[in-house]
Image (cartoon, rainbow, N blue to C red; front, side, top):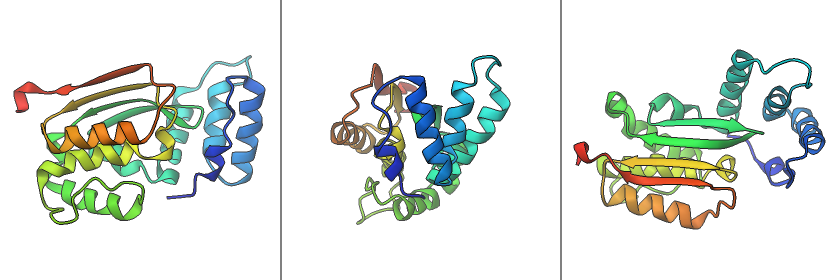
Length: 185
């Protein structure tokens, strides 16, 4: 994962020219978020190219160390101006067999994520909380506008999600769904 120091200098306005100048700084630093911002904002004459934008967002995810969260299938997120804009969590049953390894890698690669109890990282009930904390504590999620969490674990993951939400203020958060998939409990 790369340092997100440039993310702290992100414009505090929605003004297009400020974001284009920020995109130039990011691109100059080798950060693919600069290209993503330019593609999102476009030149005004041509329309948005969703295929090119999806490809550059995959580059952004790799650059920021978030590709494994997407590949797990539990998180679905969209990007806006180099930050995660909307995120939806539903624990993906198909990837459960390899989730323990993912959680271990996330804890090592994302030092800001500390969701799994170090005394028992093999506890599957804590993996969901680790996936939630890994995204919510990531600097790329600081401009999150919409969050939809559907949990399957009623104590570890709910507590970790609440701690992560409280620890990282999100002044742009407009929609929050926080609940359970009752069929899984």
